[in-house]
Length: 210
Ligand SMILES: C[S@@+](CC[C@H](N)C(=O)[O-])C[C@H]1O[C@@H](n2cnc3c(N)ncnc32)[C@H](O)[C@@H]1O
Image 1: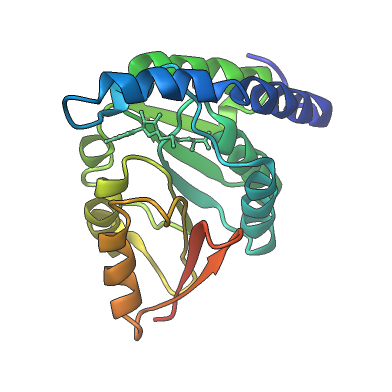
Image 2: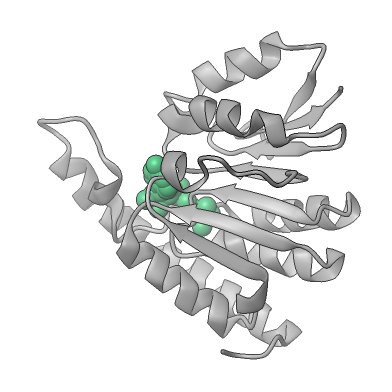
């Protein structure tokens, strides 16, 4: 396991973002596979589908500034967002529980997180997050939603009992089909949640108001 070094985190992130720029080819292959049937996560087994560098900086800052310690992530992929979150909880003395459906992606994420020297701050749960987070009983300070879009709402509802008065939820890709169920639910519960769009309208940041 590599030891933490600020330079290693930034170098690993730079390299991963650079490699992710070639995603358009990998995504293209995935889209072709799903022409005659609904899309599925394994169609994108080789694609990062990551947050942008700007989003990464924003979530790192959010976690640090709000002193979030218990961070849960839905959708690890190769670990780009996880590394930003782990670098943030290193500063707040917290931890990240992240979830990835595909074993091959999770293994690469574990490798990347190790190269960044952040392994001791991250637990990667492999399998369907609806199963791996079932019965999750710890309080959640920061929830990052970036897995399969149709699952944002059921996953959120499953974890809702673990929210508290200062829990924050960052949901990426709110412009994509599937996320509207989540959006409607959260925006409909105005007594409980205060939300606004961030990162150019691509993502929604929600704070628990009660
Ligand atoms: C958009 S990518 C995540 C990108 C990552 N957050 C980043 O910024 O680097 C979505 C990931 O969620 C995973 N996923 C899809 N359905 C899932 C599920 N039910 N449980 C856990 N992970 C899932 C996919 O395999 C994919 O790797």
